[in-house]
Image (cartoon, rainbow, N blue to C red; front, top):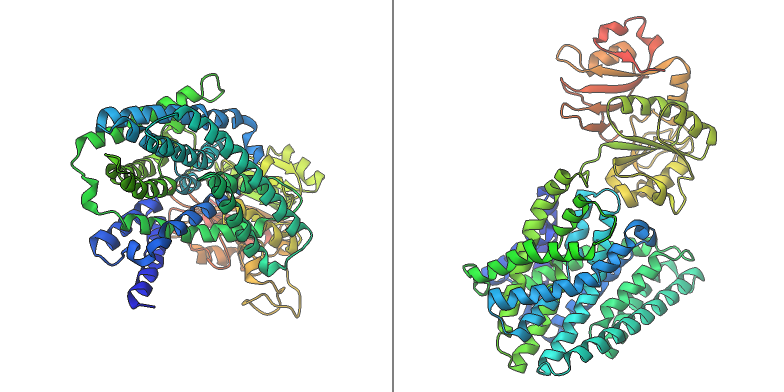
Length: 619
């Protein structure tokens, strides 16, 4: 294999991963940096030449990658999310698509001066939004209520529909517009029926394979990927671009069935998606000469502004007439339409076919669509978080704590956090514990932590961390894995296992229960602070204390008063952020911060006042 091919493939992976890591560190949209890196690697330096690197394989590889990305995204679509917003999603993906197509086409014809056939094709391409941009934005913004589900469903569902529309419009344009209405209607119906049928069949086959253990665990992800590819190819062979709809239907069907567990498949596809998105945007951006963007073309910038300021708001308000969405929710939806990988792929595919067809104006589509992608990703990506906060439809950095357990010591800790202004919620399968928590005014839920539908019933809007604090170490470990789906691995914690002589924690101290690291959340508080220790500490006259840290009174003096049996739990910073003390990150409170700890008041020897404002929580 020539050395330049190896360098090119390696550059795609390296640049893609670095761009996404930098985006995470800088809190920027990942696709924006991917496009910049692609421009620099391609036309900027000549390091990457995708057409030479892949040859005729370029667009088949890109198409398969998009299919896998859409399948992965659709695995996150749950029907219960549509209880309040289902009608709105249906309108956005029908009425909204029609309004976007007509208005975007009109703007392209009037503002840019494209011929009507080319303008109609461009409008159809820009119907799609970008789940590859929207989903990371939603994770950053964390919209409250139904609006987040509406945005996610719209972004994923309208991509295959928009791609089908674009293909059908292209076929009508190539046919000189003859019979366009009949071509569109027949093609859409055929694609919808075929794609839905094949998607459901693919999902049913995969469920049967998983449910009856027809393949070993080591092959399940590979078989799932194979079936996605087969469904995509068969559907495309019958109706062009209907494969995207087929894999989307397949993912939705799998996400909402209860016959077979698919979590491991979802996790595998999610990791694969990160690599595929990085590679796709690096490759597609590297193919476009920067000079073709024509950054000084005012008419094209007017078109981009019209898409953002006129087309999207008009589409949203037309689609939500008579809905129960509040004005703030409509405004949020109106400012959430970044274009992404599907638009880039579709226009890149059409560019070659338009050149061979000889249609005038086709050469302007690719740079114009990439200009729209860059502008919408940058504008929406940078402004959506502050706008969501201003509209009060999102809480991007929730400080609240969800406790997996409601034992007496947990209730006292939760009371203190609530008094300090932090949201709390408790889950317990013990009805008495739940009742006592509710008597104290704490939001408590009687449920099994490991129930599959637990996330459907919990108010998670203000909660950013999950603490597995039941008396059962195995349940805590399983709950930490379960809730990582919502809070991420960095946001789930569990108590250190109680002492068990002769055993050992993986990588830990002697005398602890063996527990592999991949089956743990972040270990809470201190190595000795298992559930038994905390329960006994409270039973022996312990209390939850809030201690202001000053230059005169630091953690060392706190230890001198309360001894090593005291357990620091949380630190409240000066900007009112809540830091959780962990085994891996021992407490180091600074002056101006407040330490919340579980202590033995008897151990203080009557010197509680020595700690300044230290006082026991209300018992």
